[in-house]
Image (cartoon, rainbow, N blue to C red):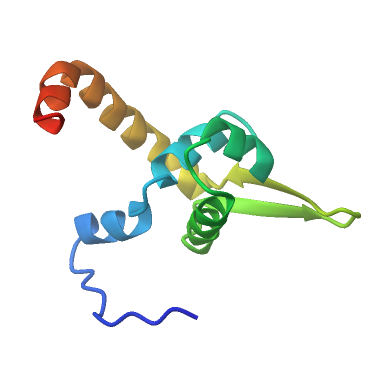
Length: 115
């Protein structure tokens, strides 16, 4: 198991939020799961640039943080579905606001990124 070399510094809400959302695909995973319960293969199709391994790691972290729930059906082969928890649902307006900000400032942000 991974052990941190530098201890977490969670002194405020921003630190906590950053820790929970840190990861390239977490915000997109939450957004897509908000649209309905999804299986890992469906998430992989929606985010084709991500590897299956990274998506699984980030989904597990989101589950550990209480933002998504994982339902495993007892069948062969196993069927797994992810859905948002109440805590995860409370984050959707924040993600939406971030997306709107990005849309409103798209030209300037793209110019700054592509410099």
